[in-house]
Image (cartoon, rainbow, N blue to C red; front, side, top):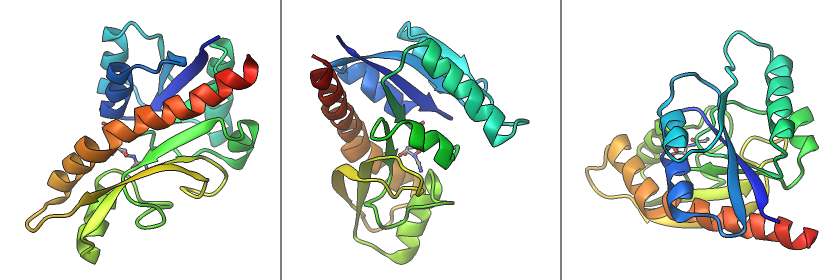
Length: 197
Ligand code: GAR
């Protein structure tokens, strides 16, 4: 039986697109859940005929938000949760429910430029400010520590003279994130599928 995967998004969804385009042989994307209405990731889900829900973070307590999210995950019988540009921190209560069943992509080589406050372009701004010559992307399991869970895959990307945060972000996506995320999702999804059969 294929692993049922939910992809959680908050923005443009290029990593979701990379998963859709690569395909996950041992799994299927059974749900896309967005924490903000109107994000382009929802359009990508619609075009790929993947069921989607909006569970807005705004105007809710953490508990209410997570209760709704869990209800959606259960309704779609989700086995594996992929955070792909999902910018809401999940509580310990939530992460403890799904040990080794939540994975995240982060646009740096953890443990550099990670943890609370490091997301999206901010990560690349910090890397450029520090003057590192190599950065990259990391896929890791999610636990109660922000960006602190076990590392699954990493890939390094060169920083070049004259890079802006936007240019560096694009290079990290093209050369690392869009390859790494489908690989890591397949690895974990295969493990779940194999453990069941
Ligand atoms: C990606 O670069 C992802 O690594 C990053 O947000 C971007 C989302 O882009 N995630 C984080 O910073 C998490 N801390 P996308 O919506 O086009 O996939």
